[in-house]
Image 1 (cartoon, rainbow, N blue to C red):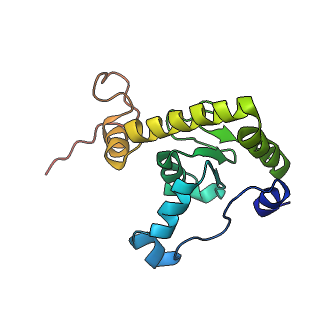
Image 2 (cartoon, helix red, strand yellow):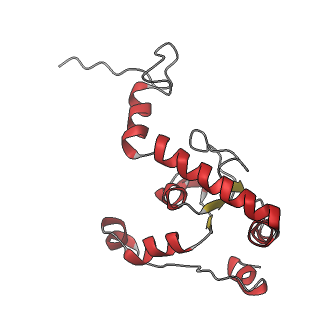
Amino acid sequence: MTVQDVINFYNFTGVTGLVSTRDKIGRTSTSYAYAESLLDHKVVVVSQRDRWEGHYRLMEGLMSGAMIMSDPITFPPAGLADRVNMVIYNSLNDLAEKIRYYLQDKQGKIERVRIARAGRKLAMEEHQPHQRYERLVLGENFPSDWSNPVAPIIKCNF
């Protein structure tokens, strides 16, 4: 079973595969097709290879306002939690059942909107590049609490 099989079986509208140019061109330019694809869907499924966890597709999906469904993440970005602001799936069968629930069930639709809004809010308020750099350099609790930084303050002796 593939995500495309799930789309076909439930007669959902969806896109799998590439929607924009890949490699260097796709990573150095803006893709209207990619942005439109994110904005046109209620659910975005993210599957991350172990060495590529934390790529921008997760944050781009969250910022789009769609509900994100992701395979398990070893070290999820700060604040991300299953069924709070994203949904974790553990197999293709689990993914299929969760997609069906969040798109067809009355209570699932309500939960999907709540989760999607919470995900977008977290991404916009906590995970824009400048915010992530501040946490990396100055610590997780910057600026209100300097007693327990995640990263040490770097001293430069020039």
